[in-house]
Image 1 (cartoon, rainbow over the protein chains, first blue to last red):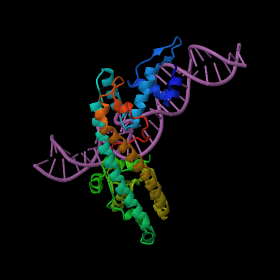
Image 2 (tube, rainbow over the protein chains, first blue to last red; image 1 turned 90 degrees about the horizontal axis):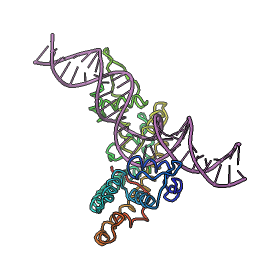
Image 3 (spheres, rainbow over the protein chains, first blue to last red; image 1 turned 180 degrees about the horizontal axis):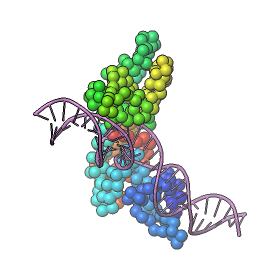
Length: 141
Length: 141
DNA sequence: CTTGACCTTCCAGTCGACTGGAAGGTCAAC
DNA sequence: GTTGACCTTCCAGTCGACTGGAAGGTCAAG
């Protein structure tokens, strides 16, 4: 199958597939007479594996590690489990940070009507009053 | 005061301060005889304002908007409140995604002992079994 | 008079995962 | 025989917020 078909099957773009090849996530495929990449179901499987691992929060370099182990016939489960546990810890930390941040923003907004009538020389009392804020940035998902 | 002192007062690095100037967050300061940047307390205030707004989850371009309004003597509160509410919505969405992700990872890890004894031909059953996963990536904070 | 901390400008790189676009080759259908 | 979809390579750009480093100027202390 050609790259477009593999893309259609997996939801990755042809660009992304070539990119994965370039960084060693996918092996260099056979080529047709015309120089087109020719993929098999093994590639579909591998790409689905990659996408799944990615959805689980693994980074591409981690996935590459796992695939390398897999290609050597090893069981990457220990590595995967370790990574998953690290992920869970990070997620919990992240959630806690976000909760604190959200609660502060909500409280700030709720108090806005009174605050808004105070001295405005420095711009916005909403921000001036927010000094003890949390330290985590959010990324707009 | 020179850039190092401003940096020390605010927790920003001299590099960052120059960067902020270059993108229009901080005004071009006066210079000393030697060409050194000379700051006043207004700059300290402005930089603290920036840092606080940043801790509240605002992006630098949003902060620049707010400061521009402030510089024109307007009350940016409406803008800020709107932004804060958007932030809160995004945070809630984010938390929900992360919770789903965490729960799946935890469940996966808990079932690992049984799964680990199954067919390992494709690498790690932990990943093979995880098809219905959520769609959000996390960023390790 | 030299050392060393501090300052200057400017250019380039980082992280992560792609994406855009140019310039050109291939192939099946009409 | 030509259109148009698809493929190729290669280089560069995106986002966001910086950070690194080179090459050089300034200044107070010892």
